[in-house]
Image 1 (cartoon, rainbow over the protein chains, first blue to last red):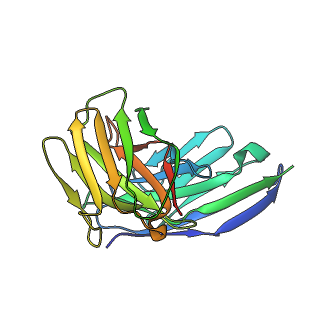
Image 2 (cartoon, one colour):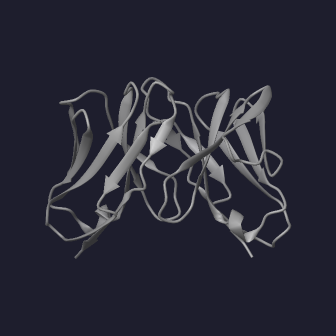
Image 3 (tube, rainbow over the protein chains, first blue to last red):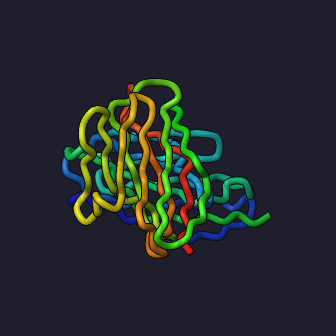
Length: 109
Length: 115
C-alpha cells in the first residue's frame, strides 16, 4: 500500500525566512510525485511533478527535489501570500493518487 | 493546465436532505472523473470514479447508495449526497485524469455543511 507522510504538520515563518517541507513516501513503482498548494476550502492547485530521484523543479520562490525515499519543497524568502497548505502525493503502479495530510504554512509579515 | 469547474463552492443543508454537486470539464471531454473527500486537516481520500456510460466505481467503505454518482456526459459528472447527516460535512473535490503528463487537476471544491 502506498503511503505518504508530510512534516511538519504546521510551520510558521517570518517573511523572508527560508525553510523546507518534507514528504516521505513508500510506493510500488513510482510513476510520479506531485506537489500541490491548497488554500482553505479550495481544491488543490498543481505546482510540480517529479518523476525520478535527483530531479529538481523550480517555480518562483519554490523548489522541489526528489530522492528515492523523500521529497523536499524548499521555500526561499517566503511572502505572506505563500501561506497555504502544501500537499504531496504519489502515483504508483496502482495508478491512483495517494496524498499526504499536508503542511500548513503560515508566513507572517 | 486542464480546467475543471465545480459547483456550488459552498452549501449548507438540513440533515436528511440531499445535495447535488456538479463537476464540469471545460477544455476536453473526460470519460472518467474522480471524486475525493477531505475532512479538516486530513488527506484527500478518493471516494469513487465516475465513468461515462457505465456505473461508477466506489472505493472500499464508501456507500454507493448514499453517494450517487452520475456521469451524464463527457463533460459533466455529478455527486449527490443523499439523506445527508452532519458527519457528511466535508470538502468534496472532483478531478479529471491527466492530459499529457501524470498530474491531476482539481475542481475548486465544494464545502458541504449539514446542520
